[in-house]
Length: 172
Image: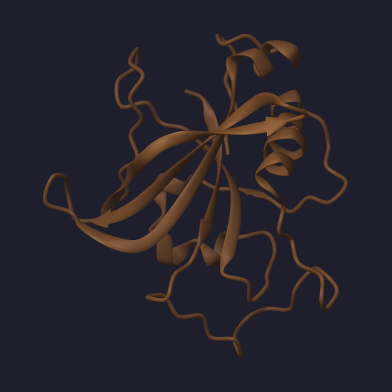
């Protein structure tokens, strides 16, 4: 079983009660809004390497044991922003296969489009996959407005930091 981190922006179909929102851990006016490159090169790479973070902004959550609407409460940063960041265990559908189980209790995350490259200094260091949440069960699930971006390091980058493909991976 590998690991992954994810980024989940909420959508217009969700509501957040600003009065009930807990105070932010960031000073007023500051936002946690890393680029794709920063997510892969700093956060994901440090997580895989077991290195500490200067600012621990990303919590570990089992995304697939939670419904999208329940994730805001699990975010480490308590802000009114409608984006949340998590490290999450990756669940393989079959023990020795490559397909991932992205089902929750009430639906599933479905990949859309092709993976996009994340580059650092002209070098491809990671890949970004976009997933959309569907309520119900495949193939009859209903598409929702929930979107998740999943980041992962490339095999070459994993080798550069000293973890082989046989080691558990941390993914975003």
